[in-house]
Amino acid sequence: MLLDITDGERTRRQLLQISKAVESTSDAVALLHPHGHVTYQNEAFSKLLGFDAAALNETHGGAASLIVQDEAEATVRGAMDEGTSWRGDLALRTAQGTTVPVALRVDSVKDPNGIVIGIVWILSDVSERRAVEQQLITAKEQAEEASRIKSAILTNITHEVRTPLTVILGFTSMMRKGIGAKYERFVDLIERSGQRLLLTLDSMLDL
Image 1 (spheres, helix red, strand yellow):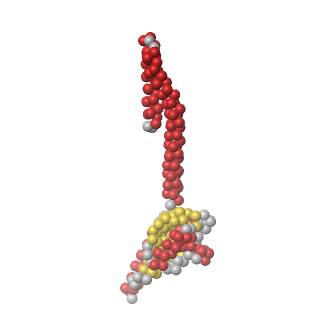
Image 2 (cartoon, helix red, strand yellow):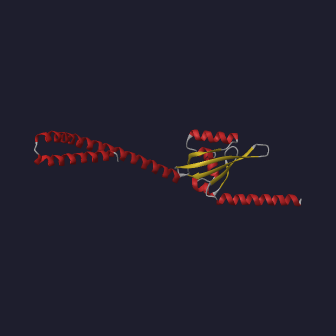
Image 3 (cartoon, rainbow, N blue to C red):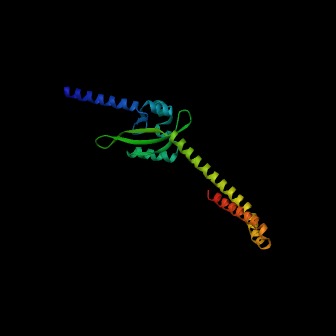
């Protein structure tokens, strides 16, 4: 009899420790009946989705019905029915009518005979991560658009400048044949300046 009481007290203490750990974690945790009804949820779960267990079960028929995507809901329900684990990102409906992106982990609790006696849901709000990812995508798209515009502008500028400049440089070669030494240095100046401008245009295209 003393042994039974000792074992019972030990079990009670272990359950109390587990309960405290679950309540203190920042992750949203819920324990589900094998059929999907919520039997327990920690404070983080209640805050994240805005439901208490009774309202969730009565109004929605369990946690899985909160999954926004039909395909994801079917996949999670399948894992719960089969007693297998599942991990992935999906969106859940909240009591306020909004949706929240979460990383969901589903695990089954089985008795010694391998029969599923409960299901554990662990949720992490990934809203901030998604926001950062979207910011990175937006920044990348903006950078690509800016690069495209810059390339188009430079291409247009170099075309508009290179064409007449090429003509000018061509004429300087012809002018050398018909002018005296007195004006040759002016032709040299035109040619050097033109070549320098061509190099500048080429370097702009390489940016």
